[in-house]
Length: 165
Image (cartoon, rainbow, N blue to C red; front, side, top):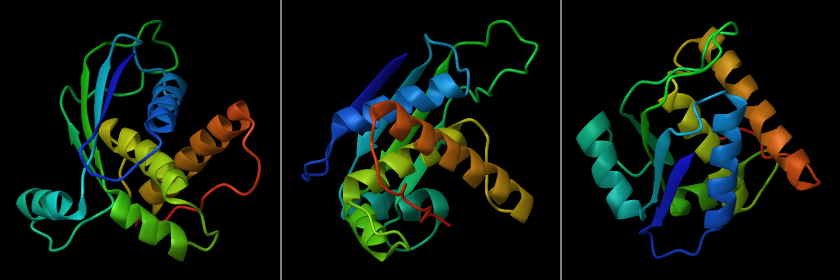
């Protein structure tokens, strides 16, 4: 799995954890090991520009996903998933800090960025949360991936509750 993490935000973030959880999520979703992903960490101004440009919405947001090859998790009977370029995930630590502090289970910026990384991966794989049934599926899968990664890493304590809407 080729995953690049590029921090352009000026904020110190745990890039290794972002890389690790992205790799874990892609493996868990059975994405081809030669697929490629880019994660970019930007400041609030850059995120706001992207949010306006691509979503026509004001202000910065927490995470944006830009799919490339529209890869999907393979069907259960597929032996080998196709490989390709997943796309880009853009994260904003300033928004993550605020969301983590306001979450029902308060958590750190880095924990929120880990959650948002998984959220972004799922969007790249075609998951969405516009409809209640889609939201239940996506957020359930997101929680299972974050919890599984945390357990594998031996991280104790409550998992961050989803803060993205």
